[in-house]
Length: 442
Image (cartoon, rainbow, N blue to C red; front, side, top):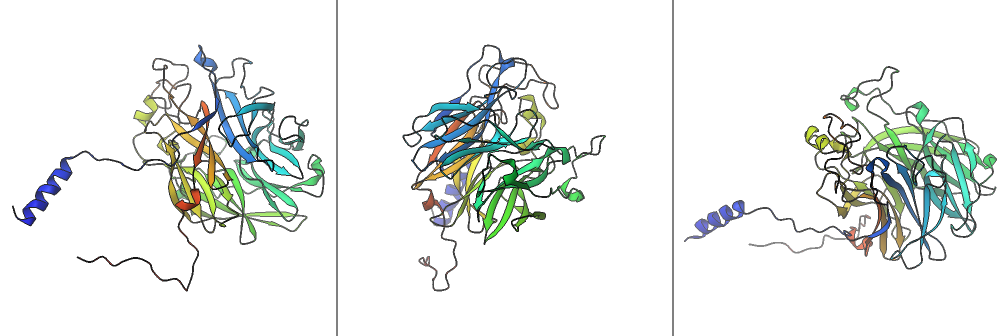
């Protein structure tokens, strides 16, 4: 058998073999921080979400999460109108074990620590006012909520609280103005529980007048975009000394995946001037992401949900209880890094499932030594024991929606990406550097 014949045979055999995938996720094994209780009656299914994580100066890890009822039919634990639906848990062994230490009534909250106190800023679960609470003892007890702004129905999530030049900044959306984006700023020289210490920027609405970005969306009778909320869950970050907000961007009801909206924020100490700059490519930008900056390397890091096939047929997914269109796939949580906060390189997959009804999403992260701890809103075993369960019609088919699916989660899980910095290329330019490597020779 000559060499050419050998190659042809080898190639034919290779084509006949099933494909193998040898790449493992970085942190598929996880610690369950919270699991909703099993219910005999799935109508009262409780979901869990809005994970946030923070390390205090003492080394203690604090995690927050909130519960809600899929169907508000009772006063059971977890309803969005339940006064203590936000759970605060602590770990004193690096995240191996967790204990609940308190509850509070904040929804869509972000944790932050300044001036020897732990704070949470978010929303009232019913009126959607912007509220803040404070803990003097690492989350064991909390002050009464203070309302900062109550003139509209606001929205947010566990997104970054950025500290700069004596002020803190956090992004929200005004849902009465079609998810218009805004930023609030708190003066650290004043009592943050005093509403007069806070200012609000002008509100920036999405540029909806671009037909190519809304080709599949129609309008409701009142003129609102059926495509949903374009601007959601903004990240306030600092790039070269200037403040920007990178927003989750839902265009074509998330079918246009991998896009973020960039807004610029200017603060002269009195007035917050806020404006839309541009759309920009970002892996996972159609879903919630949270950006953190590594002080050691200067790199930005984020975890986002990658969508493998947004234009696949919708009907087979809806028949099984999938929430939304294929652009709402949340089963692949990818880790990315950036030199400038805008252009992202993928470091690897944190965790994934092949089941479209499962998910790892809405992640928050914290750097602990050489590791990155990723706290995920996770739906695992979504369709277990519910094959014949029907309480709500599917999106297009009339089939069942499950108590848990790609959107509605039953767990908060902690994933440890070890030595995460080793996953990044050195992206900084160096004119003295030369290309390393050996030339391949036949």
